[in-house]
Length: 70
Image (cartoon, rainbow, N blue to C red):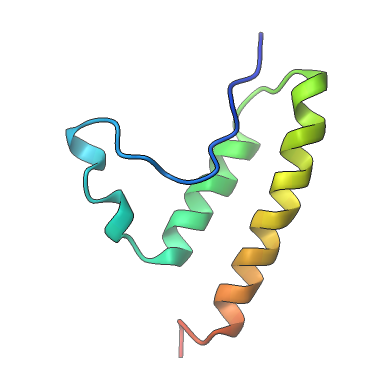
């Protein structure tokens, strides 16, 4: 199975996703992380995904430190 292109940010593609850009940043980053982990990536693509995954985890930590939950 060939890997899909890495979703760098959520894009609204149908009627149900039109409000995606209004979601809380924590929810958006969690959806991206889940998509990365639950997609079967090819060996070549996984190297790129792994780099982006680390960036997404860093962003999640940054959001947490910013006090969104306090």
